[in-house]
Length: 461
Image 1 (tube, rainbow, N blue to C red):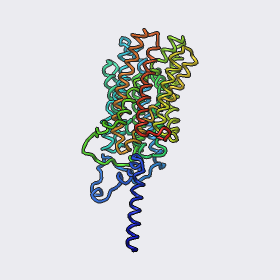
Image 2: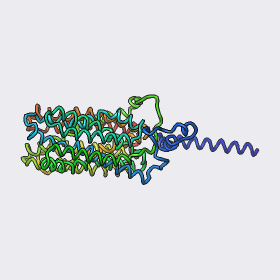
Image 3: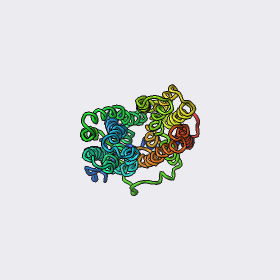
Image 4: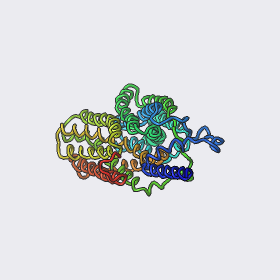
């Protein structure tokens, strides 16, 4: 009878254990399973240690540890100089147009900056594959070398625009991708509780870089010319990135898969909602940055410096927003916070900018849009980690940035064409409506994601 009682006790404990496991959500089970799956080096694995260039774990560090913040600081500094160089390209474009290539159309010169951003997003999948199969410290180090070399070579290309398109544009963008993908994905391995804040701080680094690199670049160009400005910036990029890449250690080693890229995620309706929402949001994203300065001059009658200040306001608030919304997401949930950010960004255009032609409402629109559009940029990688786990985040984020590439290539030319053909360069309402409408559609896709992931209206998600 005692044996029967012991057997019954064991059966009961097994049932309770099974029921307890069944109640744990999939994403939480994945987080709990990561350390064991990723850091188990018993048996055959002990005899097959990764080679020096392959992905390695950094000992057996716990999540939310102090070293995670070292990764955050390193990633933020890396984005400060990669994204900062992209954001400060306008200084070079102005000098090229006025002095170096006065016969070239401004639209042709703007393609240099466009190709920087496009190349960085277009090669997101290859960059994600490298991060999964190589040591991310090596990947980010190589990316920094490519960026620096591209700028230094571009400093000697003062005879033809196509040379700058290749060097300062495409090659720099390829290197920036090898820096960007590790910087926004590796911090998610080190955090669970503070993951939104950590990634928000990293992404904010790009905004900070744009704020101070733009006047610094102007000063170097005015004092030394574009050649030395490019060389100095290239050297700084190599040095800073080389030092910071040392800190970009993996906490987990991704298990090898037969497929180089697992496209099964494309059959997941949640991913399709994120992909479509990212395309629509990116189509809308750049319109205030590109058109609000012209709106201030043409419609409001202000000086060009006032228009430039509006862009500075958007960039500054965007930097703040990436950090603040990351902290808010810790309490409200990442998808819930993304919904708030997307909705407020759309309303700032449709309610404040579109119907009014006053200085106060325009400045208010710039402040609110900047604050919430920053959250839109910073929360996407965090949501990827929450929904699919950090083991696959590098390639999944790479897929999502293909959507960002597509949206950017559609949005900026389309808004310019609408302003030229419909607004005749004086009526900005069609362009503003275009941007606000696409941001609203992005909000609808993210609402779909929210209720597919969890139908409970008030749950933290």
